[in-house]
Length: 140
Image (cartoon, rainbow, N blue to C red; front, side):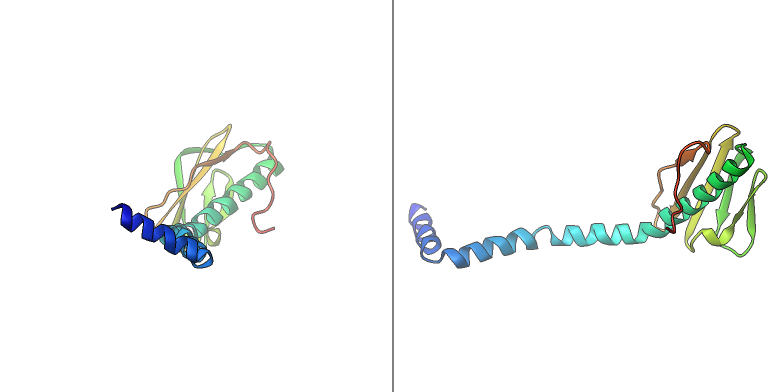
């Protein structure tokens, strides 16, 4: 066994550039499939998060202008479409929700929360607000 180690050490010492290149290649190649999978998951979740952000921003603007958080009994489910969905007195355009995404809005009159889920089974963390926090438009 020590003769194998000795031979490997001799090869490494005789070819340090090649050894460095091989080690570098392994350091990149091993995590690559994991990184690709994480990137694909991020890509498939992006429409869900954009939908949640747009609905949340629309509610924020409505609450800022009216001064009141809508009171909703239960939850309002919004899916992609051409119409509008009513969250209390606030109307949300269904085109804000991307295809394959369902957004759910709950409100108790003091705070509203928006969450989403997509066709892949991913669920967004609820985005809640009361109209007092600062928000910027998700589209820039």
